[in-house]
Length: 420
Ligand code: ADP
Image 1 (cartoon, helix red, strand yellow):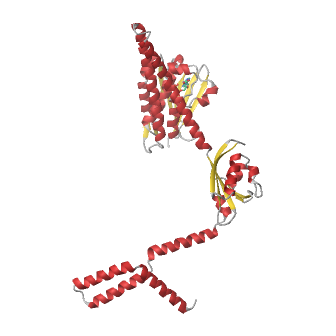
Image 2: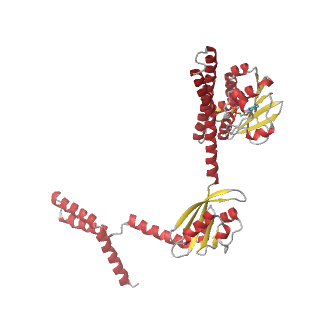
Image 3: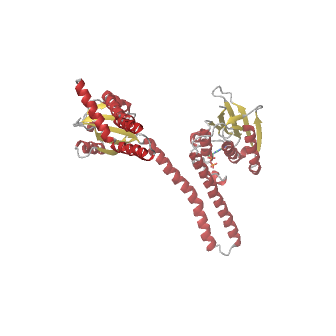
């Protein structure tokens, strides 16, 4: 480019800028002329002011336009450096690039890990034989649509559910891309929720059906039988109590689920908390003929946590020990600094001397609505949710629950709470 060319280009740009700033320039000229007319400023000031305006309008609009030009340049330079392979590798989901003949051109590491046995040159329809995958490939290869999505389940080695999208890469590359989004976890959570709702509804329905039955009897055959009426009303009262307890526990669980993390910085005095749990359960222990013994270590027994939630943990465990371990006649509650050599903490153990828990039930006992014996739980006013609430709270506290039991000798529920 010659000097003359450069000069011409510069002038053309200045003219273009002048044109694009014409309204701003017009407003400026009107403002300066008004000042000249009404504020009596002299022509010596007027002429340089107008010239200054003209020069300012011809200057490049630095901010906006320049940043727009820069963004385009950054994008162009960045994309030049981009390779399809690197981009595929950076995607965490399984991704397969294929050509018009549905032959694999490239697969990222996640695709190799998920499906194995895939390599460039392999036919996709041979690898993924499920009809929904064939339909997906056909629809995107036919060229009528640019992208499509299907749900696909890979059966082996373990069942995994994917949402698969296929799209054409575009710009005449004749290439296409398949991306697999793993939906297994979402499906598992959906199933758990559905099971939970089914269980909760069933638990509420049973007492409700019993109440409805007794109302019918009271209005019919037992209408004029005062003794039967009293007995049925008592049963109905027990059933409403059971429904209320269940709703309370369900609300407790849902409240815990809505509080995602624990407020940091609060210390809980375990000695004082466990003491008040024991005091509050003294009537239940007396009713069941159980003596509660304390075995607290000396010195401070504080841990970071939420006092109300930890109160609920020890209350559930001690209540279970008094109810299910009733035959042992005593329950020992101990608090001691943990000396197992792992992370420093404090262990609170609630030990009963009742029938104990058969080994096969121990891993499942904290599941919602899991009971060893449904009838015993019902007569003991259980809901089947106590230990799942305990587990939930302890997870929020980074704490651990260990259950040890010997059938016929009792059970020990041990909570390990980290001290920091
Ligand atoms: P529930 O409301 O039925 O008490 P939990 O979740 O608190 O529900 O306990 C689940 C089940 O675990 C109980 O139904 C009972 O069968 C068993 N269980 C809990 N604690 C003890 C214990 N100390 N001894 C024997 N069985 C226990």
